[in-house]
Image 1 (tube, rainbow, N blue to C red):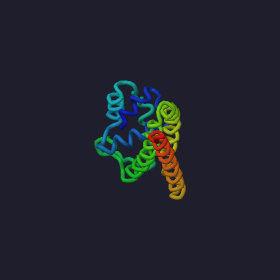
Image 2 (cartoon, rainbow, N blue to C red):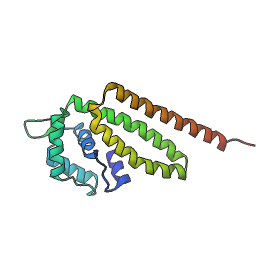
Image 3 (cartoon, helix red, strand yellow):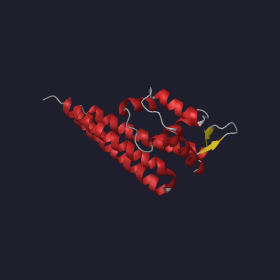
Image 4 (cartoon, rainbow, N blue to C red):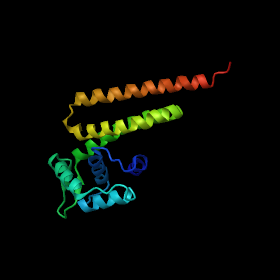
Length: 169
C-alpha cells in the first residue's frame, strides 16, 4: 500500500505522511529511528529519505502522545492506542479509496478529477490523522457518516451512468 503511494505522488510528501508512515511501519515490528529512515528510503527507491531532524522529533511526539513506546534496546514499538489510531486512519483511507475507484471508472474526466482530488484528500487525511486523538467520538462519527454518504452518491451516479451506456434504443 505505502509503496503504491510513493509511485503515485513521487517526491511530494504531504504534511502528516511521516506520522502515518511510522505508525504503519511499527505495526509490523519494532524499529530504531535509523531503521525507519533506511526503510523509507529503500521502500521509496530513494525518492524519499526522511532526515533525522524530521524522524526523531516526530518519534518524541508519538511517545508523548502514547502512540508508541521505546524498548530497552532503543527501538520503537506501536502501542494499542497507536494501533487504534492507525486503524482509524486506515478506515478513512478505505472509504477514500472506494470513492476514487468510482471516479477512475468514469473515464478520463473522472481520472482527472480523481488525481486532482487525491492530493487534497491525502492532505485532509494527514491533517485528520494527526488530530484523530483530539477528535471527539461524535466528530469522528459525523465525519465517517459524511464520507459514507458521499461514497453512496458516487455509487448511485456510477450505476446510473452504466445503465445509460447499456440502454438499447
